Length: 609
Image 1 (spheres, one colour):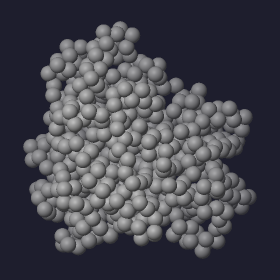
Image 2 (image 1 turned 60 degrees about the horizontal axis):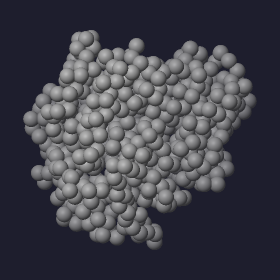
Image 3 (image 1 turned 180 degrees about the horizontal axis):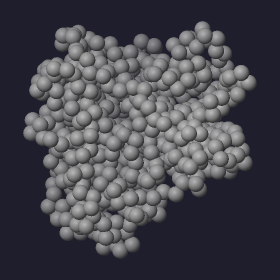
Image 4 (image 1 turned 90 degrees about the vertical axis):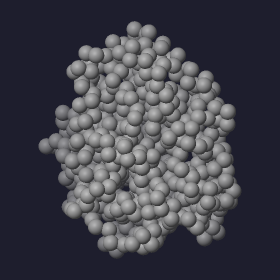
């Protein structure tokens, strides 16, 4: 895993801009602590920081190849892992391509030389890359199908700035960040953002499954992958068997690395399934035991309060799963003081408003994991693929004509000042985005009733909600130089399960029936029947009290970037009267975006234009 940044400008010679390129590249140092490299041409400049995972001795970037009749350079910077690189390497070698390294980076470069931007359709993995093709005088930016790895860009008058994280673009003096009032609802609920959208004016993210091309005529964007709905013809036994075979192959592929590996193990169905499959794979190779990690909060036995999304504590189940699977398990136990001390580092990793305790606790767990491993497996996205969240199984929520993941939670955008609400009309904004995404659902002809509606519900959850979770996972892991792989995001699995009717996805009357049945022989009964419990939240009353105090302080601070933008009465009413919701662990959790938006705007010197 790595980080990169770069600059394309057809109106100037960038060969004298080493200092600026260095500044952009070195914002990626946590993403790539092992080495750095830069390449400057007349109109293109590319920088890279490397986290060595495959072919540690080779694979340095930027990596170049010669193409065209004059041997002009094609230059690649790349982040991620392509899991089928060995098969592609053999195919490319048979076509006459020479290889100097064992790295997947060189396979991606040679694939581009052979197939152009269409090479992305052949890649199975999580990746983002930029290629400067001096033969075509074109920059190509590409991102994996589900958007596991990030890639941002900011079009300029004569080219573009790009980077794995916004901070790489912000390091170039040509980009001046600004914020419009229209961005406020997205800052307060980032799950409402459409693919490619950021709250910063002029800053875009390459959409999942898309290629962006920049040449002298400007910027063009096109998808190379999207979900397609087809009839499902297999019965339940055949479907369960196919899911198991896919999972075994995916985990086998994603364990490939030349560095130590680990897995996250919360004791839930998703992470336990991943750990079980990984343990079996390692055992077949004569390796192991699998190293696993979980996180819990000091005093949670006393403070824990069950909610719909977090009905139980993870701790006992994580220990049960680790014992059953024979893993080398570590519990990372955190308290409020540790979270407070690490919060600035988690915020810096974000570039955008953080998720508070959820970011910071994950950051600290990853920091502990990084002491022993460089690669880790995660169970992220199983709920979106198989249908695990409680709002998938509540008829009142499912059939409500809005985003089901919003549940019964109040909207923070309703806490904006009355004049802003009149201008922005946040309820209409939400309804418009819902209608926009619902219109994009790839429907199946003749499908109706609950199967048709759940196709919509699952599609909606694969948009902003999944993007936010993957973004958090990437930022917090890469901030400590850890590569986290997400087997449930393999596009082959998603394409298959997407077309399984909802009535089969809930065949045993519970959530994630297919996954439960596929791994039933690997896990103890207590975990197989355990209800969905989301990533843990801190319930320490002292933490909640600190959030409420900080909100009151912010409201009274006339220097706050949010001064004049909030309806103080509504915020106080929410703070004093709101309890847990379907999606929020408590009122403090709900209010965190207000505080984090304030901190972020201060850090970047932003005001609302």
